[in-house]
Each structure stands twice: as structure tokens, then as C-alpha cells.
Length: 127
Length: 91
Image 1 (cartoon, rainbow over the protein chains, first blue to last red):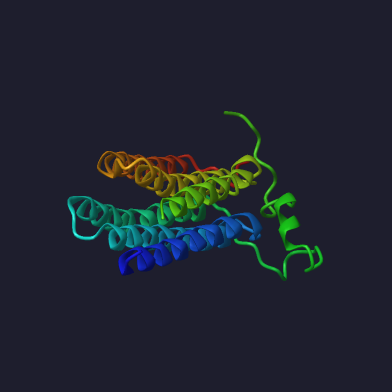
Image 2: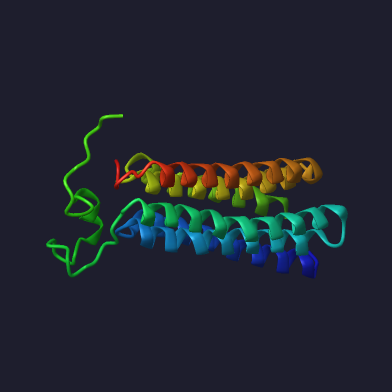
């Protein structure tokens, strides 16, 4: 039980907490853009903290260098993937959800999953 | 001290199942892809923790790097495809 075990386990626990926050936000929030907001940032922070805690836990070895490479790669690619997906959704005409446009009561905002996404008629399944 | 990573792996295995709700019941295709990306991110952490439990961290880090590349390329490819084919909030 040395200091790097304790510090590494604390940082890894913080990362697991942020992964849990990202998952709960992905389920609870009302529309696609807010879900992307929740899971994009929280998951990136969670995996960065987890990898950082494992680097502290390992010390200065070849494994910690590979973990640092993984940290840099995930820190670059995870926000890029979320951004590309969000831009594809915006360009294909997905409207954001506003609370003032929603006729449902404010007490059950997650029920907005069941309402149609915009005023356009439903697209026909032709392809 | 090894017990800590076993418990962390169990907690992560529970956390992985939460975005599956969004994959199964997402209103649009984008929600499903977002949930798939979240599951991939959590799976990467779980693979590293399994490598620590089995004391083969060098091999499992390489698997995690390959998984990160696959997750990124899959998300980018689906985003490109959905931009090209004008799906208007398709279910």
C-alpha cells in the first residue's frame, strides 16, 4: 500500500464515476443534442482519468508509455467522433428539442422520446 | 489490492448495460450510434482493467488500441454515410 496505489485508485474511481455520469445522461436527457453533450464530454473525461490513474498506478514502465499514447489518441478521437455525428444529425435536418415547444408537462421531459421530432410529415420507408 | 480492480471491473460491466437502453429504444439512428460509441468507450476501460486482473497488461493495451481505432472509424463512417443520404430524423 504505497502512495501511487492510493493515488492511482482514487483517480481511477473518479474516472469510473464520470463514465457512470455519461451513461445516466445518455438515458435521461430529452433529445439527441443534449445526449451528445452529456456522453461526449463525460466519457472522454472518464477514460482520460481512468488511463491517467493506471499510469500513476504502473509507474514509469513501457506499459505506462503505451497507456499515455492511448490517452492522447482517445482524447483526440472521442470528441471528433461525437462532433462528426452531431454535425451529420444537424445537416440531415434533425431539429433540437425546446421545452417551450413541448406540449407535455415539464414534470416528465423524458417522455419526449415518443413525440415526433419535427413538424415535417413522417418519411416513407421506400428504400 | 487486487480486489479493487475486480470490483472496478464488476462496476464497469454494470455501467456498460446502461447505454444499451438508448441503443434499443433510441428515437433516431443518431441516438443509436451515440449509444454504440458510449458502449465502445466503456469497453475499452473494461479491457484494460481485465488486463490488470490477469497481469497481462502489455497484451491487453494493444487490444485496447485496436479497439479505439475501430470505434473511431466506425463512428466516422456512419456519420459520413448519414450525411450523404439525407435521413430526416429517420427511425
